[in-house]
Length: 282
Image (cartoon, rainbow, N blue to C red):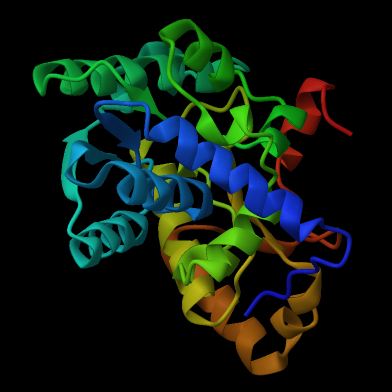
């Protein structure tokens, strides 16, 4: 389990922000929530369900850029809560601007995704669509946010100024199992900008990361650099990956997946690290 340090957080302030989210959500006649099953969207969906009951719908994108286990976890959550769930094929690989993997990849992906979400909402008699962005997301290079602003999607957690740390704390208080889950991002984020996105690359990354997760690693990324797999794991688990038996198993598996060379990033896992190539981050 990931240790989270809440010593510097104002717990009462976090609870007050949560109350404000609920207050605002209750003003809506219905809401469609972009639901990935991650920490933020699960928290938002849980609050929306608490506020609106049957008038909230979870909508999940399904495609090759999203690991199968994420979709399975999302489906399990809504089933347990009795929340209506719509899963749709988001089809990002049909977008030339996405597949070419330029710096604005996420803008085109998010724009396409939100067009589908709003269409689903309208077909079901609603105009309200929300996603689980938080204020910490605004600190990184996120071109998808421009698409969200253009589409008019709601961001209740940003409006309430909730941080990731506060969302984890509040999720734990609510008994949400996702409270200490690692950050999620689509598999395309493992491929360096400028390197075309292919189904084969995505498959290699998904299989490699699934194996590492099965070995007990939590914060983990496998970056696809051609024939080289660059593994990032959280600092608390960096020593584990070099254990003789596990090291060999990882090498064997990733060679089987299709990588010729397997490297461990000594800096460890850092969210948004691939954005450094753009000269915009760190």
